[in-house]
Image 1: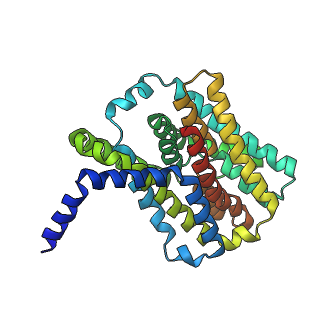
Image 2 (image 1 turned 90 degrees about the vertical axis):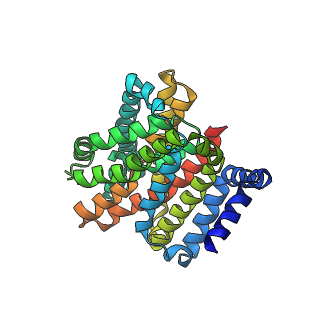
Image 3 (image 1 turned 30 degrees about the horizontal axis):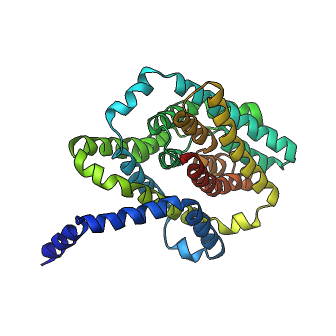
Length: 326
């Protein structure tokens, strides 16, 4: 009986008229991503209970699902130009580890942030690109293969680059859990995307049918992730001074703008400019928060900038995706 119901539902969804409405709904949700993100952020900030039922541990598998959806739109051949011509990756990584750390340091000086808050902002600036940047790049119709490659490379470089930059800019040495970082990038990015590419290779016709609804799934997943992050950090975000919020917002927006500018100067295509812009502007703020909590326990407020950045860069990234997509 249950099998019969599933079969009937599947047959109903396969009807052209039904799929037409599903595609329209998917397009509507994806096109209003910024509004959905703003609404979810406001609700989770002022009514934290609305998302407190969801654990922060749900974020990783949710991103994995989105990455899997991205993989369904990719082929192995999409990565060949990136591997054969690494110029774009080199440009992107130089922008990543030059623009964000220096911008963070300059903002801290210009805004005269207290030591522990300045340390948190600098930590965010010295971290590699976040895995969420791949999702935003996908929604912005950027070069996803380049974005994924940059995330992987920046993560591999981070064990050396991040502590060196923090030592240079903040006078502190930071130890990074290299094994944990490798495990994270493999779990959240590499395995889901490879699985998606494999399924796309063997079941290409099926993937073509579901591709139009993937942006909707990505939009809803990102909105849910933001809701979880905001609800679990609502008190800290509300109690945090406006000065830190200004620093975080400016840091992110400058990263997006300067990343796109650097790629434009090197005469890269719009898709590659988009990928580099988003990769530079969206940091692995979760790593920054973890490092602040683990290595700078004597400065508890150092974790606040990372928590705020986690919320803001997904919001600004969603808006940037809406703009860059057009």
